Length: 124
Ligand SMILES: [Mg+2]
Image (cartoon, rainbow, N blue to C red; front, top):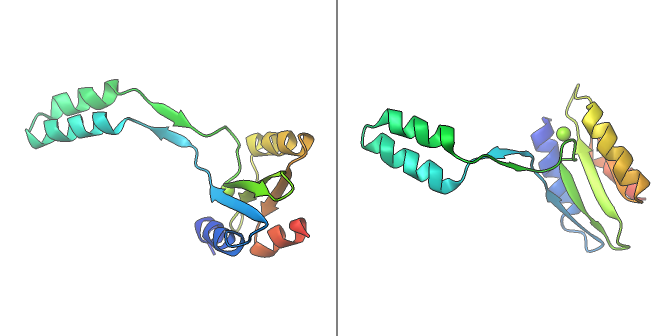
């Protein structure tokens, strides 16, 4: 099972439970859709240079926190739940370990999950 498949399986398994809410949290960088549309219009008009300039000058928007887990959520008692999912051979990065430390120091629940049962065991 790939990491993505396992993420989806965890979301399916725990997403239906009334005692918690879980959702995917992404990290990354994007550019505004308006810039993409302008660049696409320039491409349609055959103006590749303008399209390149528009995208090169687009304001990058970073989202997420460095090291944050793949899945986040809330438990019914108010604690925050963070689930870092690892596929076969995946290793927790230093940033992810630091994020785990923050969550645990603040009273949250952090799970390093290589299977659905890892989450179940931690929650019991
Ligand atoms: Mg992961």
